[in-house]
Every structure is written in structure tokens, then in C-alpha cells.
Image (cartoon, rainbow, N blue to C red; front, side, top):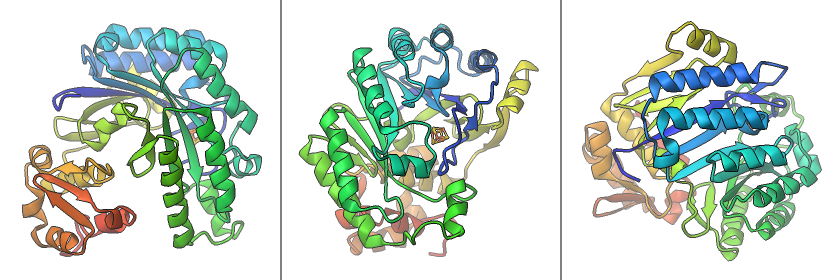
Length: 384
Ligand code: SF4
């Protein structure tokens, strides 16, 4: 992927229901007109991404697999007509959830240009899926993987969540083993986080779950996950992501490398020409703006040099082996991190949390497991 290339993110905001832990821009589908919504997305794409020739494409959400197969096919055809992605993209990913990823949807995705699918499995335990309020059961998750393979997908990611309060580490390790036995090319294992405003956070605050503040347990799960994945041939390359050789997610690598991307759809973010923007989040407001001929812009900002450099470090240091090129940060932000944080970077290196090898700044193994607190020390506004 080239530094000058652009990626395309397409957001489809509807889900069967809202999961308890979710703070994404997702909305329970209650009969909204999905064809009309796709029309709006295609119209916005024509206005903002014509001839973009993206190097990667990602259909995310929300639940893209909620679209009926003919609607999904129409979306993909329309995106190609506008952007030329089938001739330019090295990877076209789509998120799918087990309850809606039927054989027709899988076939439509594959036939109309998607070559990588990411399935939201989250857990193979019914009690954990119930606690998350997920709309599928373990059998549906396994069937979705099978359908993806039958449809011809040779690049499959499975999303999992670990560290549910009170989770028995042995139960997680067993789940992980069963998932690895399926033979996915890529795994994303996210630690459960309690985001402000989610139903899960309200339940925790009401005392419904045991205290989850057990750093040792989290470290054990983090390390055992890495070891189990490595033994199955999937190497960790980002805090939460594991891949077989040649199977890293190129679209997400574009984010972590701070390359440019155009986001279309409700609430989608973009990073282009040194500006960040976010679309209107409510699907109805988004559609109304697009159909009225207006830009569905919600927020737009040009970050100052320190913020832009921090964003590059925050994303790039997540890449375990690769880290971040300081020359690249300087080009993106317009200032060298060594001049922005002259003492703090030296201190972090001296403390063995970061290492600098020619132009590459990386977290050391000790720094990688406390990356959040490392970044906290560089946060714009933090006294240095
Ligand atoms: S399926 Fe995904 S996007 Fe939809 S509500 Fe659940 S976690 Fe959020």
C-alpha cells in the first residue's frame, strides 16, 4: 500500500438489536428502508469519493450482512461504478454477524467484490453471549464460518471479546482453542471495555457484575491469548489482532499507519488532506441531508501539530513489530515528535518502555502491555 493512496470505509449502521457493550454508531433495525439508506450512501459516495480508486475498502457497521443479498449486490456495484474499487483495491472486507450472514448474502458479497469477511463471533458460550445481549448463539457462529468458507472466502477474520467480569481464564482458553481449530486466517481478540453510556456500563455501575479490576487476570489472558494464537500459526501484529503470514488486515493497517481514508455513511469518519471529519450519526438525519443535496457533515477539524503527531503515535505504537516511523509522523503532523516531546520520549526510552531504532519508534515488550499509560504521558495537554 502506498503512502499516497486512500482507503474507503462504508458504514451501514443498522443491527438486529443493540448489544449491551456497544458504543459504535449502530441502531436497532426496526423496519427502516434499507434500500433507501443504500441510495443515500451511494449518493454521498458519488459526491465525495468519485474516482477515488481506493487501495482498500471496508464495509463496517452496524451490520452490513443485515442487507438483503440483492441490496448488498447493488451497493457493491454502485461503489465500484463510482470509485473503481474492483480494479484498484488490494483488499475488500465486510463485517458480518452470524444471525444475518446467510448463504445468499455470503454469495452476493463474494460475487460482487468482497474478498475478506470479518465475523462477529465474540464468544462460543451462550451465557457470555446472553450477557452481551448478542442476537446469535454459538451454533450460528460456527455455521456462519462454514458458510463463509462455502461461499469461497479464503480470508476470514473472527472477532472475539475476552475479560468478561469474573471470566474463568480456562473457559476463555478453551473457547479460543475451539475457534483456532476452525482455522481462520485472522483473529481479533478485544478486551471487553465498559464505555460510557452503554447498557453494560450501567449494569456494572448498578453492581450486577463482580468487580473486574483485576490487572493480573487481564495480563494472564493477554499473554495466554498471544501464546495460543502463536502456537496455531497466528502472530500478534497489533494489540488485539493476530494473523497468519500475509493475512494482516490491510485496511486497518492503513488506519494504524495514519494513511488517508474517506468514510461514507452515517457517522463515518474520514482523514484526508490533514482534516478529520465525522458524518452525522443518526441515520434519518444523515439520509435527510444527503437527499436534500447537503453534505452530511457532523464535525470537521484540522488538528494542530501536537494532536496530529499524538494520533500517529497512538495508532502506530499499537503495531507490535512495526511501530511507527518518526519521519512519517513528521510528514503527517508537520513536526517531529522528538521536538514535540523532547524529554518525555527520552524518559520512556530510558525506562525501557519505548525503543528507538534508527527512525522507528516501538513499544518494548514491557511498554506494550502498558501502552495506554505510555500514551497517557504524551497526551496533548498533559504537563511535561
Ligand atoms: S452487532 Fe456490533 S455494531 Fe451491532 S450493536 Fe452489536 S456490537 Fe454494536
